[in-house]
Amino acid sequence: MDRRALISLSDKTGIADFARGLAELGFELISTGGTATTLREAGLPVTEVSSVTGLPEMMDGRVKTLHPKVHAGILAMRSSAEHMRQLAEQGIAPIDLVVVNLYPFAETIAKPDVALADVIENIDIGGPCLLRAAAKNFESVTVVVAPGDYERVLSGLRTEGEVSESTRRRLAAKAYAHTARYDSMIAHWFAAQFAEGFPQSMTLALDKVRDLRYGENSHQRGAVDRFVTEPAGSVATAKHLSGNSPSYNNYQDADGAWQLVREFERPAAAIIKHANPCGCAEADTLRDAMQAAWEADPVSRFGGVIACNRVVDVATAEAFLGPNNKFDVIIAPGYEPSALEMIQQRKGWGATICVLEVQEAGGSGKRQATTALAFRQIDGGMLVQDADTHQLRREDMKVVTKRAPTDDELDDLLFAWKIAKHVKSNAIVIARNHAMLGMGAGQPNRVTSVRLALEQAGEKARGAVLASDAFFPFPDGPEIAAAAGITAIIQPGGSVKDEIVIEAMNAHGVAMVFTGIRHFRH
Image 1 (tube, rainbow, N blue to C red):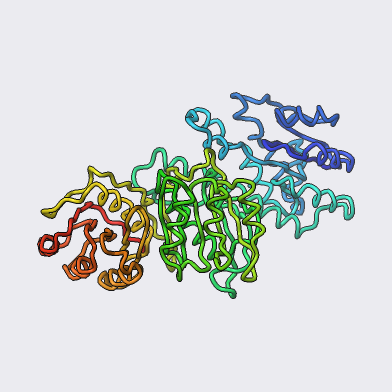
Image 2 (cartoon, rainbow, N blue to C red):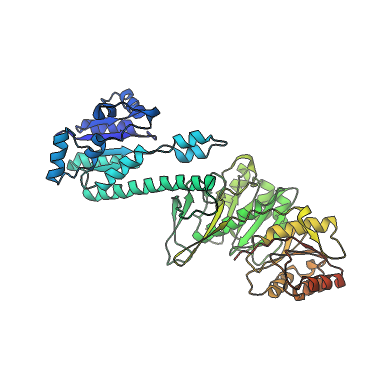
């Protein structure tokens, strides 16, 4: 009995050569619509699915392969005499190979202002049914979803006369992953468009970008995956241009640095070390921002990750490529050719610099967050929340002290507040002239964070401002800051002792504003 292959594809990469190889091995080619046209144009004989089913494709192609003469031919167990008897009784021939990939749903929803009707029509129905049926019957049927597997299948058929059972099992697993990924995308899109609140059931569709040398520590395996619907402009989709391959920890710090610099409209640079900013500044030029960020913490910046929200030019590269400067990764939306060459030629400290490019249009890191939800794994599950995308405006700040901040202080308060959002709680940030001077992070009490930030800022704290990611429960932290010369403070407010804190600041002549919103980052 001649073998039969059912081929129905959206991505037709390499299919002409694969189908030609199958035809040379004696396979009858069965196909649908556009795929059949492609095969005929390649000079191959094709049997239309409608000739198998006895029915035309219907409803604008919505119904093509959903028929017992197709699915019985796929699902019949060849080892079952009863199954084979029933096929013969109904005049149905077995289908031995199913080659299918699905409608381009991800590409469709990525289009700006895509119409709902277009989204709906790119939800594949027949394709997933074919794949699931073929994968279920992997003992008798080979299922192929990826062009990268075509040669492996042909090789097995040519040398052994069949595809090995181990290969069929692997291909079946890949098919189920393919349909699960596809259904996950659709479910996620529908939930985002139509669900109220968090969905009761949630699936996440991820594609592996690359394996990593190891995870957070050398005894752990590691990889980086991306959400399948995530557009360009994220760290997960960043292009590795040169240098050492980014590690698990590099990716974490690069993500923190990138998310921080894209808070700013003006040219901005940040340095992240162990998930916390140790330098950040914005200025009229990227070079000036980089220089100010670089000077914030000469000790902690060693071995850190740099991010810029503009294309890196030669002047900016010169600002961080000093002979004794050591950093592991730089991430930016682009690099001038001469600047990139300078970075790539830099050697020292036993490693080359990992250069990442976030591929987004316009050369500016400023964009809205595309991931609406944030996830964190806990033992046995996940914590899910809305991503923290809140942007504070001047008119949102409430002056609570007798002295109001000056215009310059207000600018610096807003700048420091943006950084505090990206510092581990309890977070304290000291800033002046749109540059970070000191930071206290991750302490179990806010007073210690204040002391650490002031210690780092030193004498530069005099005349600077301070941001706190959450309210001060007591006046001790603000009083220590005032004694060190801090002139204005921004904090959420909301403590039962707010009035005591405000009175203390009035006594010191320090201006204080409340935001009414906090930015915990555990």
